[in-house]
Image (cartoon, rainbow, N blue to C red; front, side):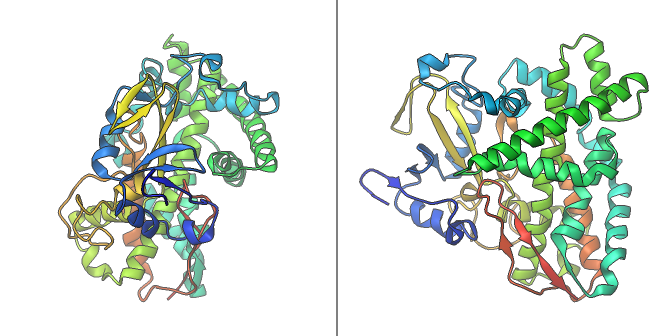
Length: 406
């Protein structure tokens, strides 16, 4: 780090960084809470106050080509080979601004409000118990593969009305698509993502065609009905929305369950205490999401020339919101580097913020609140059996595997 210019070099693919990025950001924060990340080529913000403000500042947004042309901004055209991926990706509500974002989110939001999601509690509990039944007698398990992954992918597939028998395909397509957002992606990663999108789209067209003929009590049928009522949801938007919900509906929750279980075990918290009451369960889940969130980084475009925190930004330049660091801002959280479910309740950034606050937050919270207490109740003496290793994917901070024994 050059303190004078606040320019910092961090290789996000370096295991020394992505295995534990928190000390890196605390070292930077001690010098400057705003820094220029050379590898990403943008200004990044570590403090909770800045991250909170930037999520809500309407001078910033997730898309830019609605207010400027590629020529104006010097953004090159998308290579033809990547168009199958970008054509779907740019239709995602995550990358849209009002009014398009508002329309898409309104259509989907009704399925994810808390009262609707709460109806899934018995199903999630039954699924958690079924999965534990399969490995309980073994005395050891990779929690990510056997427990943390199946729960959210099965739940979101059932909500959408996609056969759970295709779960392996959904996971494969999702992982290949998500790899496009990591730093230093290669041609092989890009080619795999394009192929995954093409397979995903072809499959969803089959599902949509079936639901048009025979609607069911699922989210795909609901979205089709909205489209047919003239709510201006095109088939491409429908496909992009389903892909977003399938990808986001499991990817983050897998890591939330894995990171949470790891944090509880490493901290040595007593499950009998942290899961003693409904209130304690909720507090523990929220603290796990603050302490080691699955999403660490979120970027936004400057929609106009502006000055923020003394930094001159040109229209089209991006800023980085470092959510993992904001969740450990010592000016907001006392002893921020400690997992403490008893700490005073303060909102965290595990689900983002502003109009792009995670639409699936009620579902992710419920899955975490149901799965973790069942896991620790069913397997007394649960312990970490091998050093946990995080995946080479800084943005999506989750474990490759979590070997546990009991």
